[in-house]
Image (cartoon, rainbow, N blue to C red):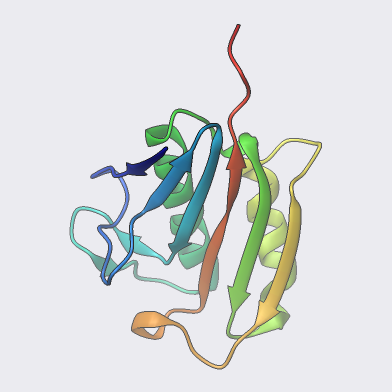
Length: 129
């Protein structure tokens, strides 16, 4: 049985997708870009500000699904410039504790709304006794 996850604390879907889909204890998170949920506008600033907003959006979706960002087991990071990799590591370290999730970092030619970063992933919510 699948459950659609939706929260107003993260950007609304801007296409034919859900913010996340939960199947039992596994949550498949759609890609988050640096949109401010209240305005649906791209956050002002550079790459670091965009990355920070993406992680805030991921936190909101994880919590709406009944978990937390540290329950993510796989993270896919899409960037328009891999030279920002060190910045991603610094910001990611503020949100995740060891053991870190599996991760891929991929350079792409473009992302929605002209942003510099998008992150999606998979979360496994622990069984609660």
